[in-house]
Length: 430
Ligand SMILES: Cc1ncc(COP(=O)(O)O)c(C=O)c1O
Ligand SMILES: N[C@@H](CCCC[NH3+])C(=O)O
Image 1 (cartoon, helix red, strand yellow):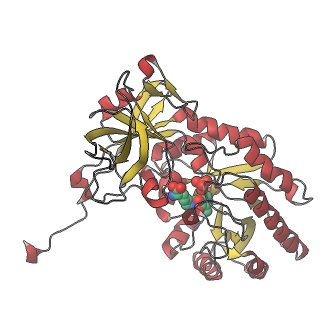
Image 2 (cartoon, helix red, strand yellow; image 1 turned 180 degrees about the vertical axis):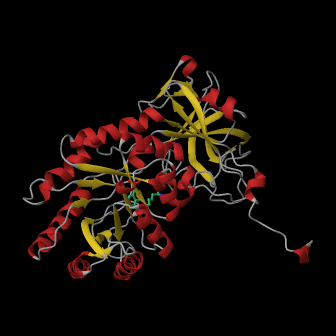
Image 3 (spheres, helix red, strand yellow; image 1 turned 60 degrees about the horizontal axis):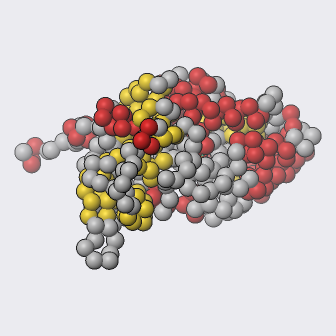
């Protein structure tokens, strides 16, 4: 059996897989499958690892809501003291509904609508991370109309290669994100003169699932060079937001730990005479919630190839429930929940019921499988449910939080009726 990558996963009697002490077979029995299961303790641990690594150094962790926006997860992080990085008016409403503090919210994203900017200002959020000259003008206009002063950072694009999958790299000059760093001083000057804008920070985010600190510190160094220019011009900066992207282990990656990530930026920032007095903001998503979750699924059919082709294990979760493998060719570990003592392993394609050849959760997995078996896809706490869709009119999975040994339903499985609740058949078709 493979070693388990996370401490909150363990095998008990007869090697049965449990999450934070709760057997996953019990979750399947009580809540059905497919179901996302998260360990509260693992999220709290990851959060405290990061904050402890900062020690007394002023900092703010702004959890990237897109990674997992379940209200229970947001409420947990809010209680722990986290701020939030949001990218839509919908995420703003979620954070507020979960009890998040508005002044600890930063709002990123290249396409903020007018109503979203107005709602953010109305709520009193901490900072808008502005991603273009056009957005800066729009924010100023809305603040003027509302008779407010909008707190802003410019999200700069430092042109650093995050060395991750091209679809989740955001800090290269050809990516749509941020303002080319060389153009930032002119826009900062414009913002500093604008009575409806208050410059509060510099922001950057170079990509997701980084597994090396070097691009992270390179980006920090470029942000500090910009800070130097702004200081010379008398523009005051109150925080440095260095984004998220802290990678996790899915199979055999060896990502830095919390202390390494924090050291990589603190060492650079604290060597700077002005920056060392500024709070550092980070926007981790995956790091806080990814390892905490599994997607629990059941084998419906086995379809061994009669000749020498591929053999398929068809499970009840599909690309609509977990799209990372299909979208990024991500390799995520898949573990049997109740392993067989004697059945010999074989090589299986782990696929879902959706009508797409790209519908797979894992290729060529060596597993001993029988119909009805439960499997757990590991590291599924981030960008799992939050990216799920209803393709093939499939209700999205239930979500369960393991909290002090109790399994609590935090999102009910979607019913089919709820999927067409907003649809109507016009009279002409009745
Ligand atoms: C602006 C911004 N901040 C933070 C994040 C969080 O990224 P991650 O989950 O990789 O930490 C993202 C997504 O990559 C993002 O776009
Ligand atoms: N959705 C991506 C991460 C992208 C983050 C968006 N900024 C993933 O699953 O890896």
